[in-house]
Image 1 (cartoon, helix red, strand yellow):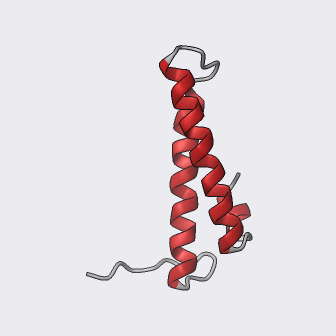
Image 2 (cartoon, rainbow, N blue to C red):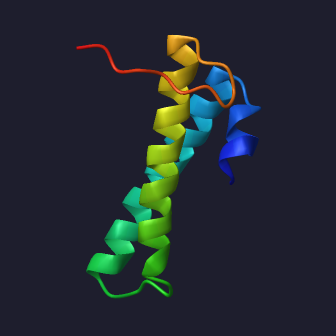
Length: 74
């Protein structure tokens, strides 16, 4: 899923999507451990998609509008 598609989702929908991704990542890690994973590059893509979802969730909680960059507070 692309970032702009995620930004259109509500925070609750996005959190649900993130939970599904984390569960899928756990399943793929198990398959990878027993060498039954067809596409090991899917792990990398999932890790990046989880990070993207977490970033967008954080932006929504901080009140960022789409396309707006937030400054970190020290």
